[in-house]
Image 1 (cartoon, rainbow, N blue to C red):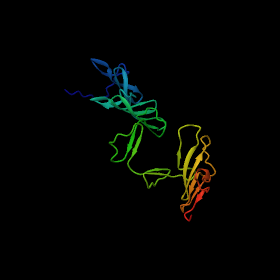
Image 2: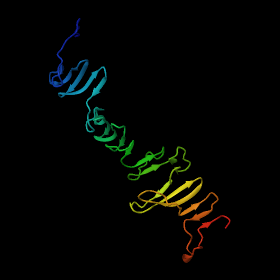
Image 3: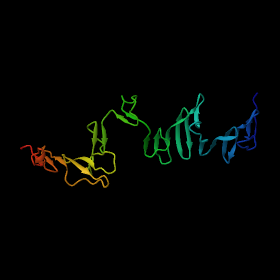
Length: 232
C-alpha cells in the first residue's frame, strides 16, 4: 500500500543515539536532525555521515576501518584523521597526505614533498621490477640540476662541484669533481665548511692539457713536473 500526505510530516529531531527514523530491532541506527539545515545518519549510536548545504561529510575512520571502503573488503579504502588523508589496503596505511601537502608512500609521517619508504622503480619496463632494498632503479635519462639530461645521469651546477665522494665520516675531506666551461677539476673540500681547495689536485683543460696540484716527486719515479700538454 502507498500512503500519501497532503501536508508536511513532522517528526522529532532525534539524536545519534536515538535517531528519528530507526528500526524496531536496531533503535540506534537511522536518520536524525544533526543541526539547523542538516540531516545526519547514525550507526550503532554514533554519527556516520551528515548532509547539509556545505556538502556530505562522513566519519574520519582509520586505516583499519576506513570511512570509504567496500562491502567485501572493509579494511581497504580512504580515511582521514587530524587533517591527514590516508589510503589503506588490507588494514594497513599505504599512502598519506598530511596537512602540509607532504605525501608519503609506505610512510605515515612524510618529511618531504614525496617520501617513499622502501625501494622505487621508474620506467615503463622497470615498473614491475623489484627494486633493491631502499634503492632506486631508473630506466631513462636522469637529470639533477638540469631539465634536459643527455646521459643516463647528468649532474649540472654553475655554483659548485657537480659530484662529491665522501667516506661517510665527519672528519675526512671530500673529493669533488667539477666542470667549468669545459675544464675538468678534481679537488678536495673541507668536511666542515665544504670549501673547495684553492688549487685543484688535478685539472684537464679543453685542449686535453693536464695540470697537477703538486709536481710528481722524482724520488718516487716522477718527472718533477706538475703539468703535461698535448705538445709535450
